[in-house]
Length: 486
Image (cartoon, rainbow, N blue to C red):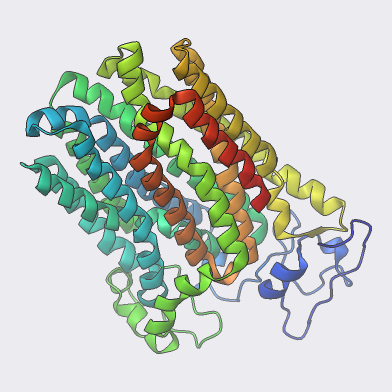
């Protein structure tokens, strides 16, 4: 960290006209041209006067040079595809009861499909990133989304639990192509100073989706058979498959020889990308996620996120059970209750829309215009406290049967806090490792879903053994202690 009184100017290699991201990740990013020794002469600036990091090349093939409309269409499509993973996973939470009745199984047995799906969603991103770095972003997204549509059909049409379980596990392995690779697209398309705001939009869709799934499924199950919940998932996944044709290949060789982009069809199926495979090693691409997890900052942030997000998923996947048992909620009542997630995530997104940039700007002004990656984490401290407090109140509410609106308010506050935390850690790791945007994105997705896998597996038994107040109180203590990792 640099001293707050330092006003050292940033030196540039004007011969190469470069702003080197690897150095900036270590020394801090400076986007204000007034803090450069020559006022950033010779460097490209944004319309609002920021130094562009990285500097775009003089070619329309560089995704950084694409127009804003094309960039934001791609972001919207990726956000929609990313949301479908947890939307379909959340749908399966609500269908457990009618499925257990149809297949004559205990709800806990059917819940295994939810757990299996969560685990493979986490693993999916690691393969997506490795394959995308080698074969290209577009063909990998197209292939994975195609398989996802098929597994949604399979989930809806399954005639036995074993068939349904297989469908959900395979679905998880292919449905997270948008989540796992989200930061790749952000890094390919946007400059450093734009990252937090773009990430906040994508994370809005990702964090909102596990609440929208149960919300919609509750209303469907209350009026018709559970299969229609998955037919809706199939329709939404098919729309996403069509929207893939609005994407374009953003994998761009900045250091290798220029290769013509070819036709759109050749980029969609990977033929054009294959012409530059000699510049990318398959073993290297497959090994990059492994290398990323060996970086201590990445590992520390993932442990912190795991210890926070686990209990958010734990509450989300089991609260329907407690509401049904303690408050006699119907399926339709649960549908209305799940609006808590929508409200909480939207408020977190709205607050983050302003707070992330505000905290960064204040930090930079106090340090001579220099923004260190660690500045992104400042906001996680109050957000973590909100998460811990929410768990305490939720536990007490369930223990003493307080009014269900208390549950709704503090479950929404939990969503608010985790939305702030998620954007902050994504921005931090992207700033730290700009060359590994896809890898850190994949590991964040893995941490989020594997924490949910763990929490879903232990939550019900834990609460039954200790009681809600003690169980969620311990979870709050773990959440609070996770601050020590930051």
